[in-house]
Structure formats: C-alpha cells, structure tokens
Image 1 (cartoon, rainbow, N blue to C red):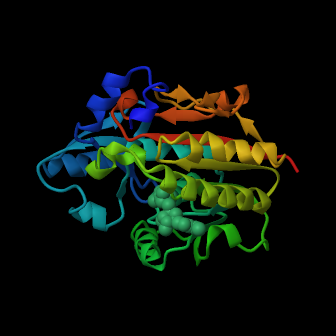
Image 2 (image 1 turned 180 degrees about the vertical axis):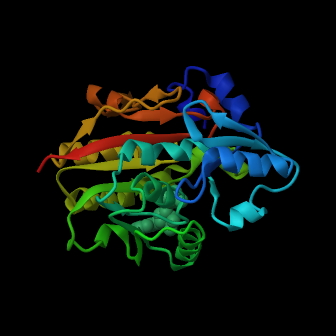
Length: 296
Ligand SMILES: C[S@@+](CC[C@H](N)C(=O)[O-])C[C@H]1O[C@@H](n2cnc3c(N)ncnc32)[C@H](O)[C@@H]1O
C-alpha cells in the first residue's frame, strides 16, 4: 500500500483502519418488510440495531450470534451488505419501469438493491461470467423474492447488443485493495502485474457498458480497490475515446475526490467528479465510484 502514501493525506488513520474489524451492516429488503418492523424483530432476538444516518433502511448491527443465521435472513427480509457497497446503486439512481443492466452482478448485493429502488418493476438483467458465483446470485434473488430480475451468464465485455438499457452498472472485478480489512493478505497491496491485467479487462467492460446503454444513458463504474490504474485510469480511457462524460457525484458520506494525477499519469481536472472512499472515512471498506453519461 506504500505507493498510495502520497494520495492519502490521513495516512496513519488509513493504516489504523485497515487492521480494525469491519462493522456489520444490513440493508432492509423494503419489498418485504418495513425497516422498523425488521428492527423490532431482530432486537427481540438480542441484536442491537442502529440506523445509518444517511440511509434509514440500513442498520449497523451488533450481537453475539451470526447475523446471517436468523429466520428473518432466510425469509429474505434483509441483505448483509458492507456500507461502501451501498453507494454504487445509489449513484446509478434506477427508477421503476426502467431497463437496467448489472454487468458484473454476483453474488447480487447491488442487484437486489437496484431491484428495490425499481420497486421490482421493469427489467433488471443481472449478468456475471462465473457460473459458480451465479449460484449465489440466483439464491439471493430468490431469497429476497425479486421478480424483475433475469440472470445471464456471459463475459461482460461480450454482452450482446440486443437491448438498449436506461442504466448500466459495472461493479468491476478488481484487485480488491479496498477490502483489505476483511482479507488481511490484501493489506500489502496488489502487484502491478495484477493491477495492469485487471485494468485491461475493466476498460473492455466499461466500453461495452457504454455501447449497451442508450444515448444519454447513465453508466456507473465502481470498484473496491485503491489502485488508480483500475479507477481513474479506466475512466480516463473512455473519456479519451469520446464515449462518455463524467457526471460529478456527491455521496452522502465523507470521501475524497477522484485523482487528477498519479505517478506519471495525468487524469485531468474533471476526474474530481469521481469519488474515492478510504476505510477511515466512515469506518467501512475502500472503493471508487464514477458516474458516466454516454455521449455518442
Ligand atoms: C466486485 S464483484 C461483483 C459484486 C456484485 N456487484 C455485488 O454487489 O454483489 C465482480 C464480479 O465480476 C465477475 N466477473 C469477472 N470477470 C467478469 C467478466 N469478464 N464479465 C462479467 N463478470 C465478470 C466476477 O465473477 C464477480 O462476481
């Protein structure tokens, strides 16, 4: 992680956050239950729930028992979803009746959240290239009782251009440096080779997403890594190709803005419209979010 010292001013806070346990957050499945009812039911079982200040359908949870092992979980009343992971679907802003594509969807945290925002009306295509991870995606879609989702298995960069979507989410496969709190082996940072390999794939995925969304439509690009080559570098690529413009986005949480430059790379002033989340900002995982509008 040492290479990021120059871009993270609160370096000691960042390092300290990496070794702290991650808070548990759940998102109410509002298609099935009211947040207040869910809170009452889980508190009756000994859990302590505190709503997030910026989303009252989500709760910080404390308790002795595993939160994934309750009747309410099996009934699909909630989804265990890390706080930073709640942000890309908010940035996407899906509405009921729209056509939405989640290009890298498994295991379905953001798919099920998008379906909630769509009030289960319209068409939500949840795609992933991994048959194994699609099992978990299907299980989550069924468990939460969502009906507007169609699941497909396809390399996202080859997703067929037969339907024009209103919005596309690219929650890209990445080197995962932002989830180092959960996976200690990631705390040393990813190798440059891994970063470069992923960056090439991410560029192909984002280009395809922009070809799949309608002209003027919205594509959100998100990762859970810190590496600029997988974040600003990928967004820069589609801006340079003239495929999209960056739409500045203000998340409801403390954050840093996208980088204008890193090492020898120049990303441009407009990259400040993108959002970086570091684990110390609000005691969460790290991530990157950029909102793009198709301009061709
Ligand atoms: C960050 S995870 C997605 C997490 C998911 N959006 C969620 O919120 O639960 C990235 C996903 O991309 C998938 N993936 C990897 N390469 C892909 C490709 N070429 N096309 C589509 N999906 C791919 C992986 O199988 C993985 O499930």
